[in-house]
Image (cartoon, rainbow, N blue to C red; front, side, top):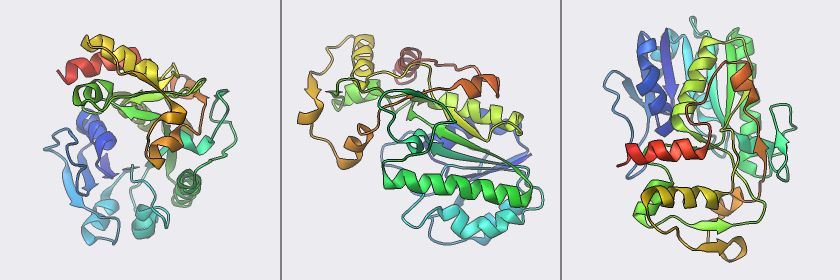
Length: 289
């Protein structure tokens, strides 16, 4: 199996680090990393530069030999840059058997705190998630034309080594913003990697999978738990109405839902390593010690 990853960022890098040896060859595209972000070392991965603005003959050559493509690049204002620049090459890739696309649970929009699963209607409240819906379908359509299997992984809030409440507390940037009734699912990056590999092992399942933990919880509870794990006082609570947040950060509080992960357990047979934020924070405390 030959794997090509579009977007070798935080999530996909962890997948390559854990499961890259399952493939005969792994290549991944990259752009300038986020300042200060810690990514795994990937000495065995062929790295290909892609800025999202133009095609590359080097990448097209790797597409032609790929059996599996995993894409984690977010859409831009014009849609999906991978489809825009490499859709034709992917549609003609002679060995392609599987496509995986990392999406977001934001495609469901707001459910007023109710439980939902993959059968819930897609009612995105944000334009960027409306684009995600269209891109999901575009990838499924391309795979269908090509005769390849495709799976869409809808991710909850991602955390893991270097990106978690422990780190935020140590940096002094953690806050406990309280909006009554608000809950979020989250997912440890290692469980994203495990779910994607389970999808590759079960390519006919799906095509949609919610990749979330078992316990949607108020965000302030996560910070409080992390503070206790560190042995420090948690930051004071701040009412949502009074909190100073970027428009991006505030937009997340406009959606309130509890997202079921039943399909990854039953259809893919995947068992979460970190079923709640408690196990995940404990692991992050050890990883970021």
